[in-house]
Length: 378
Ligand code: SF4
Image (cartoon, rainbow, N blue to C red):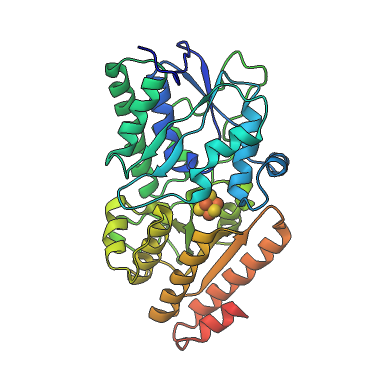
């Protein structure tokens, strides 16, 4: 018997994925799942100031930049697709949660944006089901009236793509490279669109500092480039429209980057078990685990933590990460807070000052404990 909330979408219907928030962690899974259910997938255009401005006009006042961007991405898609995918991501692994703004997002978007096409909402909640992606994926299939067999196949296809994506990220590939490899079709524009959506155009170069075996060896011959531990939510690290091309700027300033997304789930769990405080936000747990591991293994010359203005979890996690870094090492740690008013010139000045300081510090290896922290704060 058809359930009241069922949504009938024919094979070949186009489902829009907003290129924001946990898209940067789960895109290959979403794509594999939806394509396995006989649907075509369209990803919204790259984040731009105009898109953020449009999203900010509809989001609630206290929304952070990534949430405002999410609204903008849904607006890009709404006239161009047969349905929009708005999963409710409550908890992705047992004992952890996403943040409250993310939990309420599907409801807030539906409340605040008019003229939306049909919306596919499903809960992904590891508090209820240990295997939240599997159960959530099957509930999407059920909502779309697909058979149990097709649901299982689609979920496996999504999980397979996700595994390949995670493996590539952990090996030091950029988001674009990892996503292209795991979910082919990434760059193929869909036919029959009123306005074709563009694919990714500019892969980041130099975003490669493999962590294999914790080896801190340089990634190329000659003097080692500076290595920055870039930590934060995947959507803040990987979306150049949100972070104003931070990765590319650091690479141009002579840095190799290692990111918190390069840790495997097992590494996150191992490091988290030793943390002085239990952290319930999945992203916060990963950030603290990365800071601890990179510091203990002497993999980086300093840290940049990308923080969303107004984000409660970021303030708390950042405070712990910075305190622990200063207590246990003399590695420089810079919190870089971003919102829609962040100016590119100001950002570049801060990055130049930070990387200059890292270079000077490396030239004087015997810098006394504490003096580096003073330099960063100044
Ligand atoms: S965790 Fe922070 S940055 Fe992410 S959606 Fe929640 S408030 Fe925004």
